[in-house]
Length: 433
Ligand code: NDP
Figure 1 (tube, protein in one colour):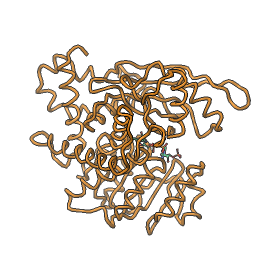
Figure 2 (figure 1 turned 180 degrees about the vertical axis):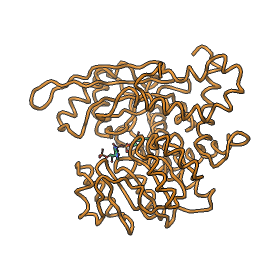
Figure 3 (figure 1 turned 180 degrees about the horizontal axis):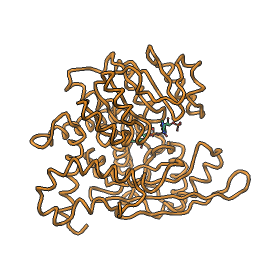
């Protein structure tokens, strides 16, 4: 608390990792002497900057931008940019800290970082968004590059925003290299990047289900959110024969008692792309809209929280447990409060933690970097195959580390431990960091 005052999300993320790794860490005398855990909880650097831009009415606005470069021990810094009014240093430090371990689990050489601004793209016109993205890059470009730091998208930052920022980066640097990922797939991006986090989350859930002797086919899947991760998790769940019963946004939940169908999902994608709220879509989609409600009270077998941090509290987790949910697999970063996590642990419900189950997005970003470095594009099938392999690799690493250290259905401990062991051994070996 004294070291990171006013940063509850960051402390929550650190406590989650520390709880998992402590039994192993206390046996590592040299690492403890070298304060490896303590050093890992302090970012290499945090850059905070002013982002001034001109609104359509001619007034000058300014926001605060950040890049938290957390650790480059495992590779060049890598992590998304988030544009949302709720962005602050605590949120970005929690996300950057998680990113170190997530990126390590992919098996690709990527360090951990996160960035963004307390800017609301939903309130901006097209011209304002362009001016903001350019102003943001006017500072960020000094701190990034393909061998230094390669930002990607996150909440509020999709392909449009990445394209605007990448264009500005090219103007400022006069050098084409893949300093951002999430670019359009015909101009430097990778096939399957848009879908990767949602698809990867479903792939991970399927691997967990295999071990429970269950299948996603015909299972009722509740999904929160209706952004990038949620919509592609829904798409893949439908591909695999599941019945998707909910989507949500910060206003409420659309419930599809008999399941969402493919055409309706396409309608939601299009209408959300045009800025519609789910509350406006009940008639068009045949769903029932529950104002102010989260999806977790609905009868489901699998829950995929794909919206935002701390979206599921203890009561919501209890409702899921009481309804007999088989597993929870996180598409969002840290979507469960500490209470919710404890409730699921007590009820013996397996949980795929975001740093493992939503790593598909950053994994394909890593593949985008490789394609850019080779000046090649890989096919959709090739990237999807690699994504599946990477998700399976993460799942296998979780099981391997469990041997002797953790319950192998406790994916939270396993993922934290597998990643922490790898990063801490590197930090210990380098010593100078
Ligand atoms: P988007 O901005 O595309 O979508 C976010 C969705 O969550 C929107 O539907 C939004 O609704 C909803 N939401 C936001 N706040 C709340 C809230 N308090 N309660 C309920 N719903 C809410 O973001 P992404 O889909 O990209 O990201 C979602 C999560 O996944 C985040 O935690 C992100 O960090 C994580 N993630 C994303 C990756 C990616 O590749 N994009 C990679 C790995 C993790 P509304 O429109 O009302 O705000």
